[in-house]
Length: 162
Length: 249
Image 1 (cartoon, chains in turn yellow, green):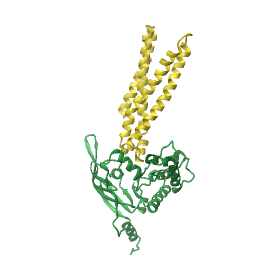
Image 2 (spheres, chains in turn green, red):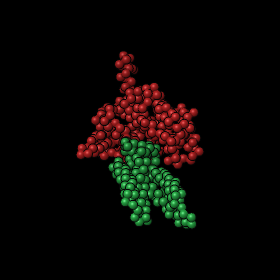
Image 3 (cartoon, helix red, strand yellow):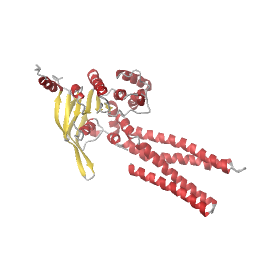
Image 4 (cartoon, helix red, strand yellow):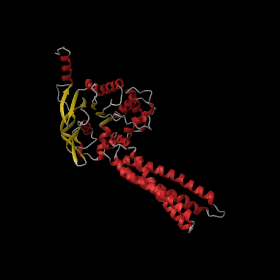
């Protein structure tokens, strides 16, 4: 688990710095084609988001190994453990993605709204899609750690030091 | 205790456990054959690194042997599927840990009902039973306290109530007094002994707490991955009597 976590942390840092460096570069060099620039920004932020979520899910499973071991001793089945983590990550993914989407779209609307702009496409692209992408990423990122947690031997889970 | 054929509840046969540490293989257990009888209070004693914890984990179905077998209620646990193993942990064995391992975000009552959730007990019945168990361990006024609001001894009492939730035949206690002060440890030992005598539950405890010796029916000494000696309570008492200069019988 630990190498995977460090890799995810490293990738998160790298992407974050890349994002910042890119913005600085664009600022210094002056604007080129606006749409292409924005597309790249969106792609970068999506990758950053994916790595951040994967890392968070890995950590949330890792810090609860002892609890997993305890639950197994009390008679929890592997299915139960996997289900707990998947449901939790789905709830966290949905609520926090909704909050994030509303925040991002809100700020964009606040500064960039032009009278006469179409509301529906804006909501679709700026709220609905980010919400689904965020929740989906969270769920996908939590599948591997949830299954790993479910399959652990109870003693291993109790003994692990994170 | 003697006089009739007693039923072994846990049997191990030529139990071997090896761990791989890099290139070397460490032998934690080197062929342990042991019978534990229903209704006994057994302490497994030994210094750290002796294989005590490994033997304890095997006996409780928490870990799988490299070779040899563990039978719990005549069932070879190596033959069980993960699902059957979970069923056995739920119904046959109650676990008590050195570090209590309560779920911190849940109240005492909710911690005790947790194993009943896994056993499919209806919520109302589970609450009733959990309340009775908390009364039994002396926590009648602490149903709705969270673990952080309880002392170490009280937390271990909750853990004992939780271990009893599905009326297991075996209570497995891993250093149950290890994180407690002397007096509280003594109280927990008395509680376990009382449960053993009143409810007939088999208690198996890994420990290096000498207070445990007083209440144990049998003391299994583990050294270098093998059982070096098994003391019977009656023998120990006779020895103590002789040391005191009083001839017994």
